[in-house]
Length: 260
Image 1 (cartoon, helix red, strand yellow):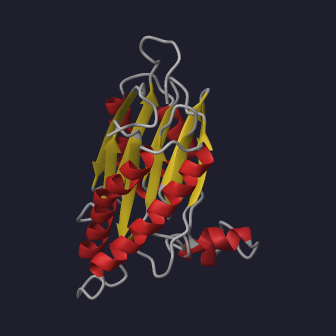
Image 2 (spheres, rainbow, N blue to C red):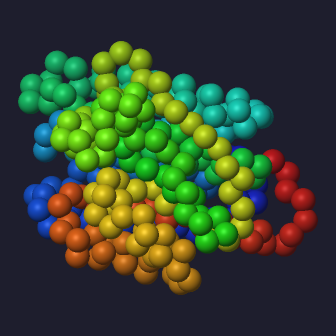
């Protein structure tokens, strides 16, 4: 496998916990550091369907991404191709499960980070999120694809409105959805010592932005910080599956100019 840059130097830690209420963990995560590829998927559609959708999503994604990292593309071209790959992934998940009894309504969220030397691309569908830690400030790079978010954008509801609360978990875009999935993307110049957090809604809904920022920006081992995130979410009730992937870019060893 050929990464976007020959000298990527990344460290990461992934944590996933069932939480204190759910019987099964339907979250899945993916880390392929040699490709600079990280992802998180949160299944939906019942116990069997949700787990299957999330597992298919993370199983199929690397094959689709590997094909595009071999090509010489600008960041915008690479982002466009990655979005196309995620759209194809959605169709593949739907095709794999069509006509199978007991898994109607199957689907999964997906948040993908593809690290490159110049630009790091984030592609997402659903309500799993990606946060970016830069100079101590944690910024959300994704937008929740939910009915509640759609209502808020149209000015038809507020966070305190009962209709908006009921719509928080109704996804408007997801892997496996009917028709063509059109994910959204953004890019950032992911620099040494900066961090990314990919996480499911069971994490960010439980602990809120302030505590999320405090933990992610803390000094220390990424695995230990991941454990703190899970502990905090469980302490807040653990009402959903809890998953996070922390990625940090280290200083390039040897210095000099990289060939990408």
